[in-house]
Length: 388
Image (cartoon, rainbow, N blue to C red; front, side, top):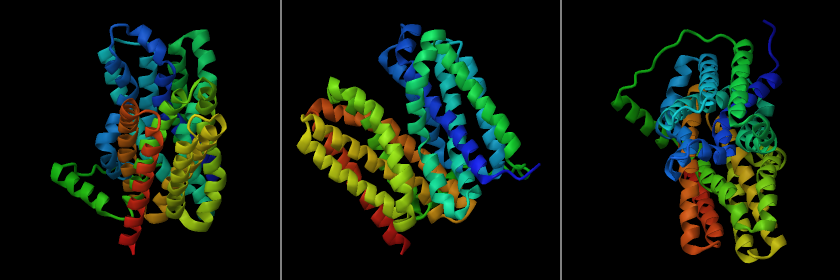
């Protein structure tokens, strides 16, 4: 086989990540149709239909990081993408709700394997000089996927029904399983790590006690807690004029700032410095949002400023994995911790902010952003001091 250019391999791994992000986004896009398909399902079951994909990552995130290296990067990715394709194809039949929820949990294991293995492989294959750019590109996989789904999915669903979207997703996952099976070198024979509860407890303690392995995840959870909640709740809270603008521009601004300013900053102040700067900028944006709420242009500008600031955190958090951890084993552990704490943030952030808004009104948003920005800064400064 001819050697594969790192550029094409990074793009292929990022494409697999887009498929993993769509495991969340595809149900979000057809949420209204899902309510009609399952008329007896209550709000809790329909909400779980979206979020339950994250539960395996929430529970087994660091365990996946410990296992992936022993099982083999190529083997894990190809099996995970193939599983995702098969599950999505069955989901297109819209089986009874209990079966559908079980399929979504199974899909969560596919998602977890991809988001743990792919960024570690990207960090390994990207040239050192382009590692920050490659990891920042990976970090955009959720925002890019949601933007593409918002544009491409509605016409497909309107023309052929919601099942067509799930079949299209199955084809995407199967295509990247075949592509990466061809592009990635063969793994060594698999070795199963011992998974006794005492051993897992020791491994978890070691991961979260390490100021290098745990640091990327500790900043990332403050990002996911804030960013996903803002994408969900800020546009409808901002009124009819701003709602459409924010829903479209917030993810685009985050992507642009991450890939342009974020990559430039990585080469000058490093990954951790960029994360801290992003949280400081989010604090400034939160103050602007509090002062400008109710005024069209200041509110829009402050909201987009926060989106851009969190885009810096997004990319630099993934870039911090190879920056702080030189070996593939530590990188796999750090990616597993990011998956675990990232799922914690995506699971808890939106209901927590929703409860605060219901109790305190719209100005709970800048307070919420400020609290997690301060926490993110404090956690990174603490870990940096421990690394000294």
